[in-house]
Image 1 (cartoon, one colour):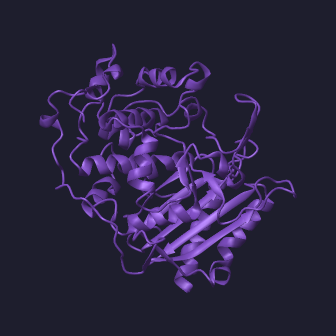
Image 2 (cartoon, rainbow, N blue to C red):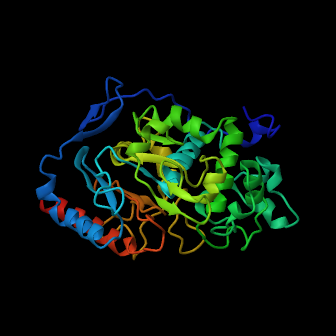
Image 3 (cartoon, rainbow, N blue to C red):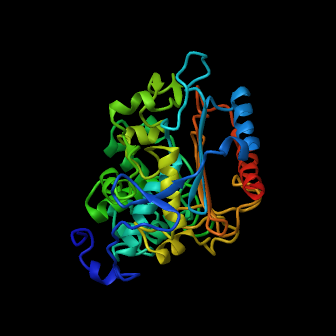
Length: 401
């Protein structure tokens, strides 16, 4: 599959863990989805309004304060889906559709872990991804006059330590997918590779392209048949079908770039020019689907991954010094958007549109919070104050339940 990219692939791509074909199975505290055998957390949220009243009141107040118009929450604890709640409306207008537990949100950068990092984990497990392989070995176009570029590895892209900048408005000068990808590949380094951690959308655009080249398949198709399908995440997709649009919360009234309301298409402008399929953004999902994904991660990655693989990617990197980053994932580093209770073994990620997923294997807790805080524009940043308070309220409610 990769020989055309790297003729001596057998010398570089060595199995890290003995490859295994997982078949869906049941786990304690789970039920199976529609006869598929795929595990997801057992519903146990009949008492959620009483148990999580303080946390839900924070969401209600945030909506009243116009932090975001709509929110969906999913909470899993010890194998059970103990919270599944939607609050608010698609927009602030009183006649706007009410959010429901079936509402689908633009995950923004949560895509980085649910899709791109999960794909990387699978390829690593199957011996197709050498984390320390230079990017130029997979994407020759990444090379340039700067000799430092040859030292950038796939691990560095995952750990946000490549030296690439955080963000560039590539969409302002690139009009097609090929043009934008070329612009990303040519983006100058702003630091020496491995010298510091700087969260980088550009790095994940390039990582997504590298993974696609390795498997000779697009990111969206791979994720559908290897992640979303096996986990019965039936309301998760890149470029969601038009039939879903009425169930998707709008993210922006874009009057500067696309000049239309953004609903059912990715909010991120770079991802938009990339056709809605990118390593850094583009997945849409419901809160319940993310709870299903989180439950798999709390089950050691099963049924799509082995626990040893998950451990490699969710362990905080030892360098650069002071980084909070694991491979693809983030970890709590005080002060953290996860709040004050998530353990040091926790991992999670945030999304620009107001989404987040945090998973604590020690507590066997996962909290999904999906909002459209970018409606009608991205000026309101108050979610940064709300999110840790919300997570703390959830954990405190679980302690008292």
